[in-house]
Length: 140
Length: 132
Image (cartoon, rainbow over all chains, first blue to last red; front, side, top):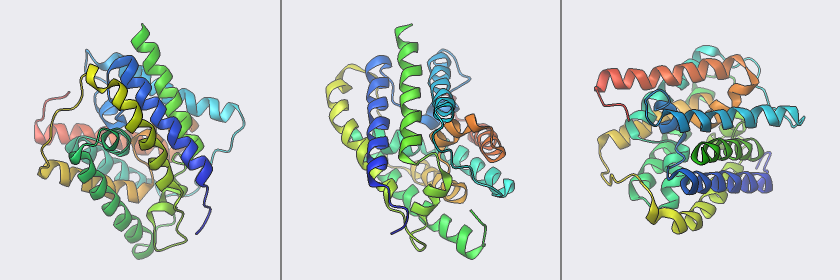
């Protein structure tokens, strides 16, 4: 086991869960970030989505302003970043969710559909990370 | 206005959770997905901590609101989730962490987020699915 950080992981996860409950309580919406992203330019629901994304960006700025560690990765090939982003964009749209919508929120709602999605993307994620790192030898 | 304040507040808290937990660190995410390397199981606890809260919290609020109603376990769900996982395993970013990491203005996060939007548009163009 390497770099195991159970406390910060569980605490951060709890904050993510609280934020999801907050959005449901305040807006009646599911905190599915891929859905928010893909619907960012489609009124009438565009406005709250833009505010949510602003909140995500502000969190990053606040984190850096507070001097907390920002683990920047050096030298990851941008072509692979583009390929990853493209697949995440297509896949989350086709599958109707990501780690937040199907994972945090879907599992919290005991949705069987989301459970299937989580099992599938965890499995292909593990395979993909293995192939890219160890078969193709991409430094990441 | 209250709803918009809720949206930015929830987005902010969500983002802080991503940074605290390590999800915003693609190297840590890949250290979790790469189970054959020096496996870092931490991110299992991120999902565990988050779902522990939503399991309880959603029970309180779920009756009042508009929630996804689809129950179909169909090909788009499985194929889409599979593609998403492949992309996640390549770069170590899923949508939330990618967006909050954009605040660092790192080139990889900019490229990833632009490609993610492009992927969404591409799917819409190919599938002709109505935008929600």
